[in-house]
Image (cartoon, rainbow, N blue to C red; front, side):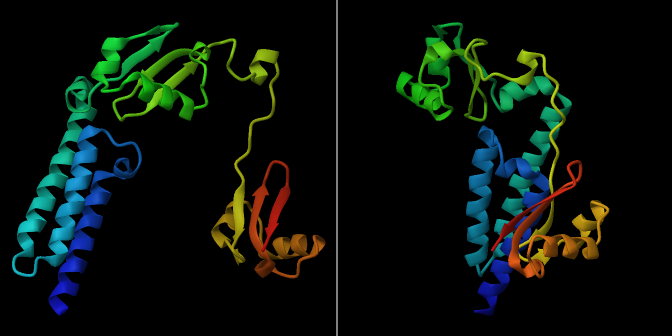
Amino acid sequence: MFKIILTSLLSVCSLFVIAKAMGHKQVSQLDFFDYISGITIGSIAAETATDLESPWKSLIALAVYGLISILLNKITALFPRTRKYINGSPAILLHKGKLYRKNLKKAKLDLSEFLMLCREQGYFDLREISTAVFEYNGRLSILPCSDTRPLCPQDMHLKPDEAEFGIEIIMDGRIMGDNLNRANLDENWLISKLQEKGYQNSKQILLAIYFKKETNLVLFEK
């Protein structure tokens, strides 16, 4: 029993260290090699947790896969031209009303799958799409036609104020002291604002967001 707990902890710790070294890319936009290495590393880590006789073999394999992934990321960063050989390259599937069948085959997509990807992004009519690009991470990027894209202030020669990022100062009833200081506020000010709105303390608030430019406190009660 003790050996199982020890090897499990060893597996979790080694997997955490390798994942941190490889970066957040593993949990965001995966390319082909990241996808394969992620699955393999997870499989090896699971084997490490149950290998009571020689867990070091699995740890060495984990280290090798992790180092290869880190090395390839460094190579693609230093030599951008190698990316198309390691990660692949984007492919234009649709441009100005023309479908590129050759690129569809290259991306291993049939027409129904391509139409599904378009619908997932809200495009049910291909005439609304100027260009569709299949990225190397398996996602579809779409440039809408100029006459169908949403209206923006620039089209109307307007210059609205810059959007402001709200600061969370209460979360689940707890006052976030660091965020409160970042907003140049104190707890006395916060309590007085809560009392103005009919609340006795922060325990009654699920979420409070402060917008500095507007000097506005938005509250969501429990």
